[in-house]
Length: 406
Image (tube, rainbow, N blue to C red):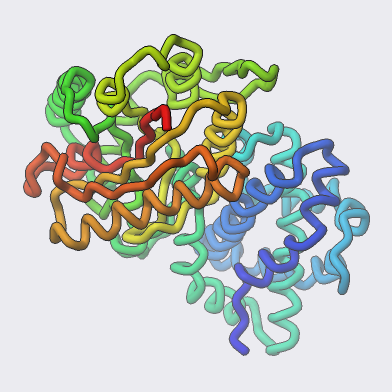
């Protein structure tokens, strides 16, 4: 059987191991699993970057990999892994000056503390190198042989990195990677050619004007705002990344539920808006009025061209499920939308599949009885032409929820 290092490491850190790690770090098992799903491909990307950097980097990884075999145990055990918690200095340096920012991003989207995120890398990186070392020895590979193996696995590794991590400014760059590979992997990428200052400014003004217009329209099955769906971005999506980076940072807040639970969210995000609405006298509104009110997910992303939800979307799905449980009288309808590109039939199919995926995800979290329906609207409500920049058309791609009485 062909060796797949990504799947091997994922399997190793499955089963009861996430719960063991969660107990040792005083975190939720589900949140630790989400963090591990994000950290494993990110750690492999760091190793891959070191291999790409130079011959010396490839030799260093080879040496680390052979030495790290002792970090493995036939039966994964957190106690054994934590014996190496301090880790080899060179292993910890694989993340370089990005360690702090990567840990912060994973902390934000998984719901664990930043310190716990750093601890997870201290467990994952040595074990990952250990599997690479074991593979190298079993197949009598030299440093260049192991380097070639990792380079051949590049697409597989990079495509597994959550967009929340890969979209970080200055994330690991790989010389020689084709635009298609970068787009599939990062889903939000950075152009090598610098744009002039004129286009980004015009684009920002256009997007702001569009958001104001969207917030005032009254189409019965559209949300008030539109979310950037990174799952359909291509190599030309770099202006979206530049636009996002130029806008003010999101403000972290705590959203308090009637049952006393607090949710980590963003000011003005779906959790903030939805809870504010449900605390109002929404039941006095007519059914038609409710149908006009939609709330867009702002952190629900899918893999390119399909309805597979990315690991980084888990925290927001957890939050929406908790909100529904805290407001048991509320029902919701889920709507899926696409832009105008592609055929109408394909867009309808994709939007329905994504609406269904969101519905199923909430059902798995115990809130299924409050989801009355999930409907895909395809591109019928898209407002941007197919020849407009993708960062503008991305505003037509989103999944939304609407509160219903029954």
